[in-house]
Image (cartoon, rainbow, N blue to C red; front, top):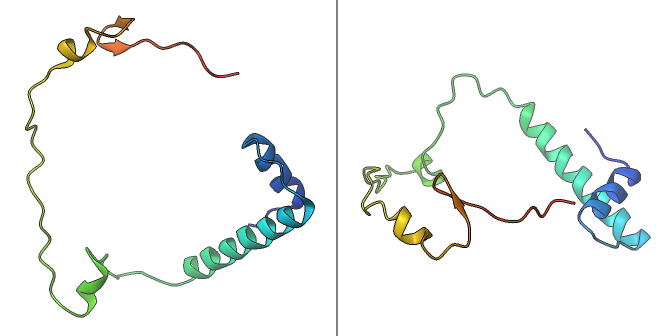
Length: 99
């Protein structure tokens, strides 16, 4: 996959960025360079390779400090929403901001 100058212009427009032509070309080169690296990584056959929990695990055993995923705080939704100007079915209502 590679982008064109028109793609960069469209992305900059969507992001509300004003890029000079040389900046647009630099961005194009950098992003296409990134895509080249990704394509090279995709070409590597990783069949049978187990994912590592941590990069250091290749040279030493790593004991991950994981805790149980349990709720530790009580549900205070109603108390937290008392000061909200508008709430419906437990959700904050906000003005529409999409153009």
